[in-house]
Length: 255
Image (cartoon, rainbow, N blue to C red; front, side, top):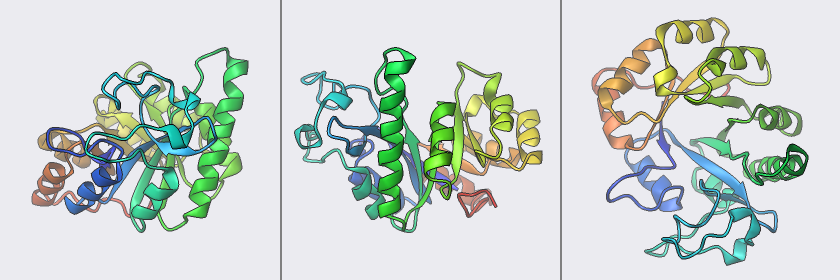
C-alpha cells in the first residue's frame, strides 16, 4: 500500500495536510494518506503537523497551535484552510488514513503534559467515531498515547512510530507493546532484513517512512514492508506497479 505523507509534498503540491493535498494523493493512485493531528485551544482536532503556526503563516504568526481557537486559524496562501479531522476523514471515505497523533502538545513537566495529551486522544477518538467510513489506523511516537488509544478506541488499530533517535526501540518497543499495537511504523533506515523478519514473525505489520526513492521503495517491499509512506505518491505507485509490488496489504488491522 502507498500512503501520501501529509498527502504529498514538494514543488507544485498544495499545502501539506490539506484537503487539496489529500485529493491529489488519491488522484495519483495512493491507497490513502498519512496525516497529523493536533488540538486547538477550544478542543477541536485539526490536521496539522507543526507545534506552531510559524511555517504555515510564512512567519507572520508564531503562536503555538494549542493556544489558538479553531475559528482563528490562518488560511494557507491560495485559500486552503487547515482542515478539521472530521472534514478530512469525510473526504477520505473508503481510503486508508494513518492518523498520527502529535504528543508534544504542551512541552512542560510530565504532570502538566499528560492532561493535554489525554484530551487530544479523547477528541481524536471521538472524531473518528463520528466519521466511521474511513479505514483509520492510529499512530504515535509516544507509547503512553498509544496505550491511551487502546483504552478509549479499542476497535481502531494502532501502530507505534519509531525514528532514528531511538533505533534500539524499533524492534523491542513494538514487541513489548503487543497486543496494544498491530503495526510498527519505522523510519526507512531502520528497516533491516533481520528486523523485518523478526516483526513479521511476531505478526506485526511494517510500514516505512518517508520513502521518496522508487528503487528504495521497491527494495523495502521486497523486504516485507506492507506500507510505503511517501511525499511523491505518483512516483512510488508507478514504481511499485512496474515491479509488481503493489497491493501487499489490504487492511489496517494487519490481517
